[in-house]
Length: 438
Image (cartoon, rainbow, N blue to C red):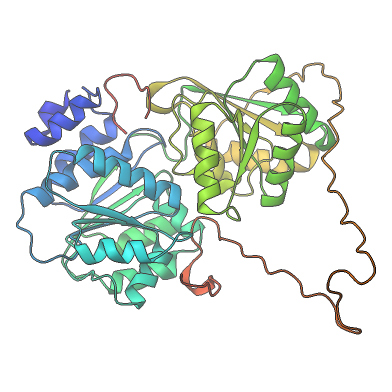
């Protein structure tokens, strides 16, 4: 089937054709007609199968066919992370390029005033993370009473990140009558409970077995001592001449340290996690995409919303504590029909986590023999020069009995912390094969 058979209007077809897409993916083929018919949808599909276009295209068409009244948003897309919000916003802009519809994105970690200006100017489609959306609602800068279509994208991840209370608060701000679309890569009892309360006689769309990884992603395990993981990773990257590798670590500190060690080994690396500012995260991701950064070390905040051109390798430097997150991690490769490789470096203390992952996958992951490698002597980390001792009578000294005042530091939360848990802050494509749309 081609996109022409889905009943999309000419303006959308022009945009789809300009992107080089001719055939819809299975999730798009099933979801688009149902959404165009006005039904609620509960959709599940493996990550990287085109879920974004599956709801973006029909949403754009429905809004174009209806008269606009006022400046309040008529469609709301909720996402768990800033990166995913930006990806959805890019898709809305791309597919809606020939339509007179306006959209904007709001998320935390950046100034709120430009977002207020955009909302004040009027938008048709609002893409938002829950926390920042509630900030706007609390300040009276967004009106959600005219929302006709609600999309919960990556709903399972939002629940994993503790957004259920924020979601409930948002739902109270919406009109009772609306179309609801819930998209999720995995299903759980919590997702089923949310769907039962949110959706009205939904169409159930599931294009793959639950909680499965894409079949075009090869999966292997290396059993290795924890202390040898870094040297094995460096050997694999160098010996295999890997040019683009996404490496997952469990902690922010561990991600920073590993990125620093890789750089000292002569491998260009950057870290991306929740304590990085939005600007730093954007620069790291841009460098990874353009090839100036060879390895991107990430926490699970990057497991959703990263759309990277033909990413060949994903490495689990540490296994995730939540088995379903493994599916999301390796789903960054093997997207849009491309082949990909996912490797996991597993130490003895992670064997239970590996068993849990295999139980979710309902299959064993092959264990490969560890290749011979030599321990690496890394370059010394640059030492900071001590401040010169001030000469007598020069410079200001602390008053007797007073300690120097400590510098204040600020951190930006990962993705978007639930509203009830956020600290007070000062205000202030892919060379995809033709035939598969994101």
